[in-house]
Image 1 (spheres, rainbow, N blue to C red):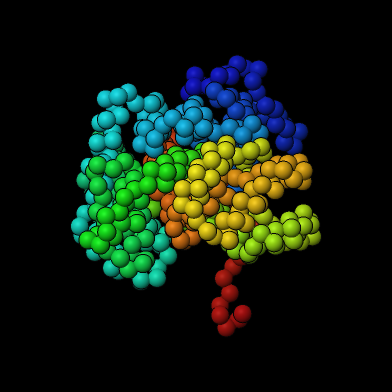
Image 2 (cartoon, rainbow, N blue to C red; image 1 turned 120 degrees about the vertical axis):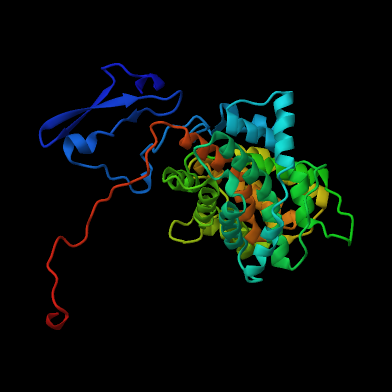
Length: 437
């Protein structure tokens, strides 16, 4: 086991002293990032657990997929900087990289894209499954239900111990999520479903299925919009061990099938503290209302006693500039210029961006526009309703989830997740008959 780690000498130990008795805990280091203290034998040796709400100081697994350095503002997929991938690659090439660890050669790229393209259709009976939802159901509620139901339609790829079935399930999820996301949107507005087209790339056929209207008009995919959509997908494909990814891994640790695990990830992502940040950003822009109101809200944001917070600025993980935001900044400007959209909220967004990049307060506090700020602007300009934003996030993140799930399944050290607790309830007491209470 220790051969995996770069530091395994006997001197690489942490000493923990409890009630005057000392315990030696190994210190290991990965290929980069902080070292870790191995506490797996802590309870056995000391009778104590660690207490870490939110697991913010706990490494729950080994992973070779995604690395974040928040201080440097760095995001790497399998070692490749996110800005290089967004500029030079496409989403399915990035998906192959996340799944397999290396960029594909020409033949591998062709075979993988063919495998995804010819899995984009969903079972016709699944179309009728949508009719069970209320017309006004939230798109994420529909996504959770439909993706979870995929295991009943594709039960020939639910054996997690069969590598070929895992591969097929992975391809199916990556291929069908755009179709399901587009169907979710169409169902919410009462329009007929649009079938995918195999002559379009991943982002293009998603936009075609979302905004095309069958038998009414010939929808032509705009290249600028498709390129921006592809970048959004790439930038959201994975982000280390966040809440939804950890949910997928935890569900998978029980042996649940991949469709159920991804549905669990979608449910976790639905939470406003996780996947709803770009939607919250748009709500903030609506609250500000117009460019004339910006100074007042800037003052409110600077006032520590005012509950108002600027959404879409700064990031919990990135203490510097969000590297994904740098990519989407140009994409947002390209989309707005291409569409020529006249929208007061987008005017507010552009002015806020200018202030944030010039105002000493924002620069000192490192409150730069983040990926949610720009993605919200792009998606609104494209015509997506805000309730669809998290659906698009889930679509892109499915690639990361399935990559993390596959890594977990093949990890020999993986165990079923079983966090412990600091119990603060009643200690043992005797039952009292109801007439004596």
